[in-house]
Length: 138
Image: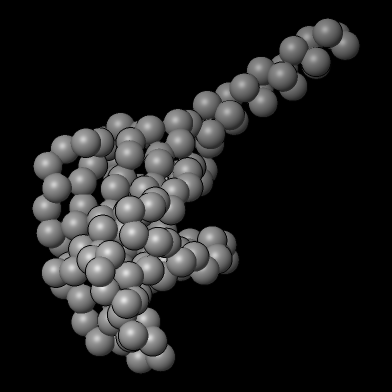
C-alpha cells in the first residue's frame, strides 16, 4: 500500500505538470527606434494580474524577453506599456499575450517598436503593424 501511495503521489505531480506546465511561450520586445534620435531607448513595463515584470529601458537594437506559461485556468493575459521620446511621453499600452484555445503552445510572440508604430509577428511569420504611437500622460 505504501508503494501505491508513493506511485499515485508522483503520478499526480506529473499530471499537474502536464496540465499546468505546458510549453512556455516566449515574448520578445525589440527596439528598432531610430538610433540617431536623442531619445532612442524604449521603456517597457509588462504586467499580468498581480505580476509586474518591472521597468526596463531597452537600447536600440536590443531585446527584452521573458517566458510566459499559461495558468491552470487558461486565463493568462499579459499587457505592456511601451514609451519613448522626450520624457517618455509617446507610447502605447496593449495586450501582448492572451491564451487562445487551439493555438499551439511554445510560440514566439515578437513585438517590434519602430518610429512609425508597433509591429507584431508570431513564430517568424509576417510582420504587420498593429499600433500607432500616441501621446501619453507622464
